[in-house]
Image 1 (cartoon, helix red, strand yellow):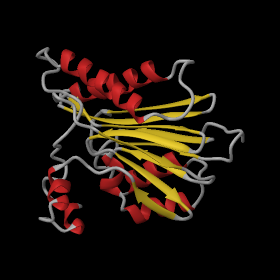
Image 2 (cartoon, helix red, strand yellow):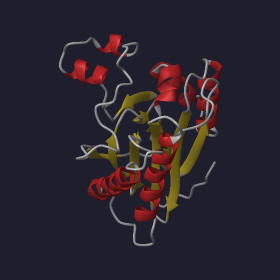
Image 3 (cartoon, helix red, strand yellow):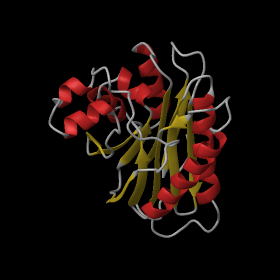
Length: 245
């Protein structure tokens, strides 16, 4: 497998409240992105708790075999409990974070997701979104009350209906079969606010090497309105080697 990851505060925000994890395994990889909410750097704390808990629970030598979305959900549940516990302090009260995570092995994907960070699949030149945003605007789209094209600029597109830091946790999970040459892309909303899915697709079409940094730089050229984080993996044939970039 080949890997690519990058994160940047952007051109408007004073600090970066995003966090990411990219952990190669003996037979695959773990990836995650998190986008903190809560202000006063509390969001930064929440996103770091989320990715640190994810890595601590899943990157042990025992992690192997077929990717399991239930284990990813359990990691999100553990992160949620830690965030709720630390959020009781006045300094971090009300903090939370999105979390989108993936486990890839044996040309198989398992994922778990809460919030409006996203997981995409790029296959044979076409980009498709696997996850659904947990936001007021996306909920209106799902109900048929808002056309999808209007959700992009809707004033409530960033009002989250689900995230880590709420009780009880309500996350999505699933599995997908993968093919040689597939690219999985995880990103925070700083990327999708700045670039259209067509523009993201074009960057992926230009080649995988350095794609995460190219996408972050493209988001900044488009104004860099938010923190932007990208983590990606390219699937190779079984037993093929891989490198990190």
